[in-house]
Image 1 (tube, rainbow, N blue to C red):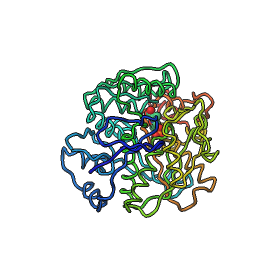
Image 2: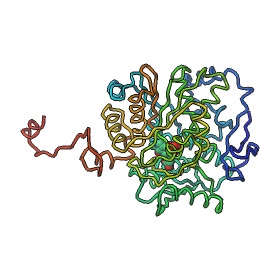
Image 3: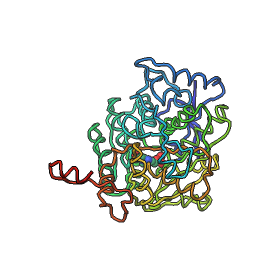
Image 4: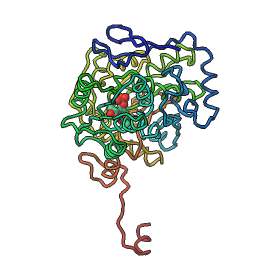
Length: 423
Ligand code: F0G
């Protein structure tokens, strides 16, 4: 089983086993698998899904079940929690609210550290350890930091996370600290933290675990592999998801390309990347037919996707071109109202994830998603990641946001009369 690394920009190739995560020209790298000897993969993946061997991460992990298409390494090297195996939800309430009858939510917030990042991180940290890394690092709006901190602790590797000061949701910051990462609060935004960690990794020999790292992308592809497997290898019409640094957008495109090449799917779903209006560089590039790469100063209540200069831009453009995909933007108001609906459905997610549902509703209203089409919206992060924003919404305390679906707490005297009055 083999793979090589190939630069998206200059085409340079590097053999398996190199510890590098970027090309010498600064371009992004692809992991290119040799797919030719891979026959009967569907049966193999289905067999693994059905079997249950205690202690074997390959069978228990929704990432490593697909390891031939992820990172073909010896089982003993794999560092897994195990992650993935996230549920699909349907909700009458959300179908009605979005206007999409056949709506499925895949909840990546039900991963070990509460976000989809664990899928990329198990592969990235496994590769970091295999290539002899002494320390691992990332810049993050919070979830990558939390995930990196947890997996580095599992690997016994020091972790250094660079986060924008004052712009990270409480649950994520708490996780990074609790899992023991050296946490650098950078006085600036995510994009400046990202530039700093890239420079620091080169200068100080830190193993970089942002989604520029091609092994992170390989792990995140399994969101799509697992989703298609859960749907009995029948892809949906649409996959809708929030887009920030564009790692997922790129990963989803690569996953679909590989599934198609292997004959595991007969047609490609359309990808719809959803951005917050205040952090919409990819949307702007989309409007310009991807003729230019846009950068903005980002600002949105969905701090996870508060990103103005996404690093995986080239991968993401490729993914949208392949799938006849599109980008849509939604306002913070639309995001928070969608979140209130997802939460009240008993499912729950963090603000950035709700952008997927807000985007689904918008596309259905615009008639771009047609009646009868099947849509899978990816919920990327857990409700508990950002309790502050949730509380402020329900208490009517979010500046510039109307609490359309507020469920206010009510203080009462400790008497039965007071309870009766409320009920
Ligand atoms: N949703 C959540 C909950 C996220 O944390 C992120 C990214 C995204 C969506 C966007 O995904 O970057 O692949 O386009 N969070 C990163 C972080 C940037 O640092 O945790 P993307």
